[in-house]
Length: 223
Image (cartoon, rainbow, N blue to C red):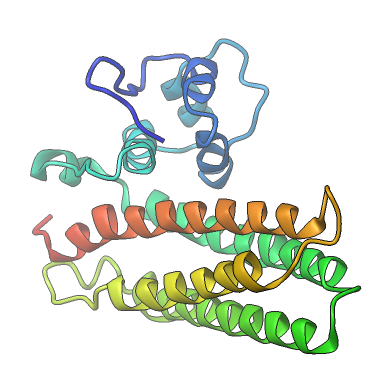
């Protein structure tokens, strides 16, 4: 997802226009605690209706849309920390309750007619990826999120190492399927599984960007 200087999301624009311009933001909106059915309401009106801060929502959207964007010191001071934490926790729930079980089901269906060795290898690699991801989530929810405000101005642990491990493991799984699991037909399920894994990899990349661009600067800033 990208945007240009001529199209920068603002709280005054209609929510429908924002989502139509960048459909990937539908997941951002949902994880921020909002849902479709907003009519012609503006982003600000939708946020206020759900008790959310519109400026923080726009900051999350801009981070998701553009990997090079980062808030200024003034913009950082306006962010509502609790809304960012809620968004990230909702993201964790989405991965653990929906994405991972769905991909597990796809792996089971896709590998049903493959060899026992192939099934074992793919299952083990997915298991390692899932374990690493859930470990990362547990670290954030037990140690980082609860003490976020207290840690302001401290020396927080970077997310980059954990993200690197996660990225490596999901890429290992993709490479195994892409290189070594032969298709069994024109519309082989392997293709569908790979598509979902690419979507998940991109979504996790956005999740990582939001943590690095918003949470890390918050932890080291004077507010």
